[in-house]
Image (cartoon, one colour):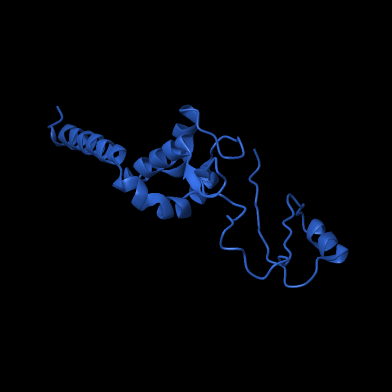
Length: 157
């Protein structure tokens, strides 16, 4: 399979057909378009939630606050555990997929989607690390790591 290059450009002027033609002549093809405009109000009403609910949370039934989304929280916990184990993103994505977790859009995980979760993991980390579930996972990680060190220390014949 041929290697695919991707470039994200921030436009400094309006997009023109000449610019698109030039890039396509260089071998590039457009794969996505992102649009932006000024919001109707200058400041969001502090009583409303932003359009994007952080991964691991959902809008509560009363519609006024955020509540934990259990499946997404479990995915975050798994990502946290694998990051602590210094697992590569490809391995983390494979394990998320193996366990049946999907991205919020319903897709399989890949290295990029795991990487995109890192800022959310930083935000959610204090709550994740403070819970009893993490205490149990940490014990399991420590036992697993110490068993690995014992196997490495044994003389090989």
